[in-house]
Length: 337
Image 1: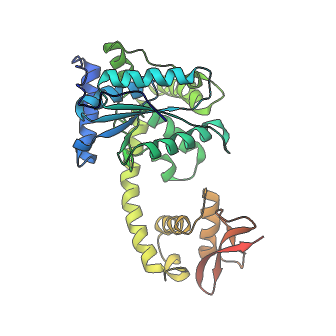
Image 2: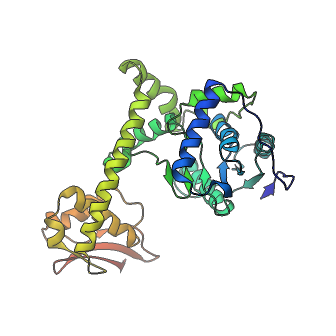
């Protein structure tokens, strides 16, 4: 980890012009801080990539919050990435951040480069944030892309709820701001965003959604598609919060501390039952749950034909985590093999 520099004292934020784009981004950050940050005096961290979205977020946060620590993750996937990261950190200090740190990570693991880079990035940010909330520069356009990806998975309403504005410690103040606005802010401030070549690489599904699918939908449906998708995600998150609370009550009623009552679950509405099952499986150590897993476990309750248990992932070496029906109870145990 490398600290790009700080004078150790209070840094005066850069004065921003009152353009339409600047005021919109500042308002979004101000509203987010007012709703989700109880003590803004302690400050926030901002994940700064050097791209337009995170630059705009950083500039606005310095003015609206004051105490901002910029965290720049160098994924080391391209030649010169260290220079890009150092430039981003220097820009953060010029904007008035109280500190800027570059964190280099190694990207490796399962699930492809995108997934591995994301895991490495979030782990590094979590370690470096020093207890502060971390603001991420996801915009309304990113939200629309996320909803479309969720639709493709076809795993129910939860998969198209998109990104939450606050999921501790991650904050997303710009979910109502279009990408074109953050770019305009950078122009207004004479900032030159870094253009990550991965953001234009057609081998990545999200890039094709951004450059091909969403523009086509906007054209065919007459515009407003990205905003409509984002509104849908927001409505589903609100509905989902209510359903999760009711499912929690069902889980409490059905549970004896370890197993679940088949009778109690079978008489509950399907939407609540499946949410309760999902929460119970995750609490028990299940990993990478899919709609197929949940459907199979649900059938142990509603379509019992003497079938065996359902492996739900999360086991250790030489064992599997299995949900099964035993003597009128739903059990979750490690089994060898």
